[in-house]
Image (cartoon, rainbow over all chains, first blue to last red; front, side):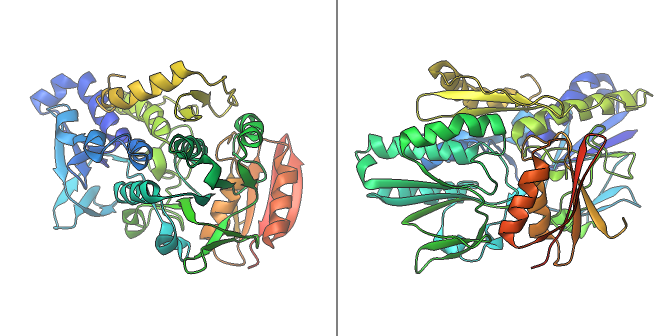
Length: 379
Length: 76
């Protein structure tokens, strides 16, 4: 029997499990193949909904479903915390001591927000990258009566369009509440333009000017003083705020360091085309867990999962597993509460943003509800 | 090259080579030397500009076969 173990029940891991299961149903039914997904939670969470939770447009229950309901019924689901990966034994060791052996391992452990790496941020600021953080921000926004909102961006972070989306959305939200004139909006970004993608920055810069959004470039948040309500960058600039909303720096998961597989940030060295862990033939890595210089986004994990699933099926059938990932990423960008655009790019082709339209916004809202077809391996 | 950390950011439109360097600088120790590889000519200019603002040091800045390679030392 061949055994595939998938560590992580997010979008990437779940797609791999379902796509392989769909193509190898006979092997699964006859016991020639076993697929096990290990997830720390029984719930599958669609994280992009956190942005909408902050604006009270969605409640947490709408952003999750039981992982068991999404997985093919022939795939085993193990809910629990993994302690480490033992490469020599080809097994994942769970915290309760259980050993789950693999012939092929897929590491899809994602990343975690690490606001604690910026002193004072947890006490003095808000994040919307966790359910708890989004709910706390929802409360703060609900009670906000105007003042200076600072949106700041740490490195590295996932969902690279979220800082712009939040900024555009919070401005329209304040206006809709009659607080537009009492609100000052400040946006900071780590590099020398207001978005990493040059075409997006070129599009957004005049929009900022038109909407009166103040921007500070080359601003990498270093520390926050919650008592004085100030944030200081490592470049030496200090800004005052009444409400601080941070896109926090992220780290790879701690199991990566416990397994001694990652770099100092717990990111796993990964081949950019084959998506195999460097120096390993039977370990694939996808999504935020890699050290690849591409966007940490659900769509990245999705397109990588397609490649990993195709290679696993090919390998199990005696092939060489030579399907390559081309670096494809796709992101919607909300440009307010009523319009949106999108970008698509890969290693060889830069993005070309389209003019925002209401139709794209409606499609984004529809996709939020259709998302469940993606981990199911349908869409 | 053993003690230089290579950051292969070729083909990286987002987050891009400079953001990859900032990630490296945030997570590695003072004294680490990075060599960022970029396929974007703009990196030869915008990486040194940020390095100067952040108080680090450009060790080398060169082009090899259309790849821009900038070495940066974390000094604080």
